[in-house]
Length: 76
Image (cartoon, rainbow, N blue to C red; front, side, top):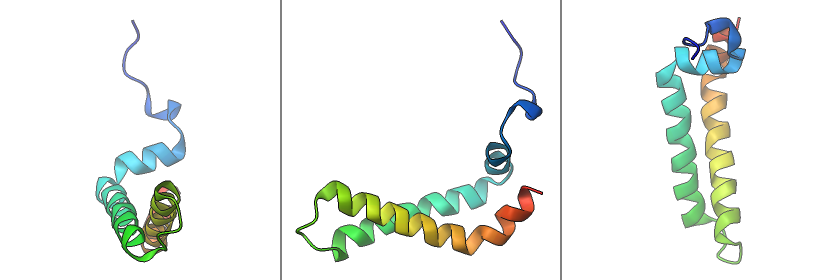
């Protein structure tokens, strides 16, 4: 049985996510809002999974654009 992982064992992006829970939550909320908007606005001819993935990608991208400066500063 080993003890808890040392912080050095985790990748830098995972340490940044753990260190900034509010930014992580904001990006997740943007992804969910993107899915909701995609289900409402994208064409019905698209499959449900395609609309959901497109919305999650779009919403998550917007969240990353908004928080990029803070997240990049966290990785330095």
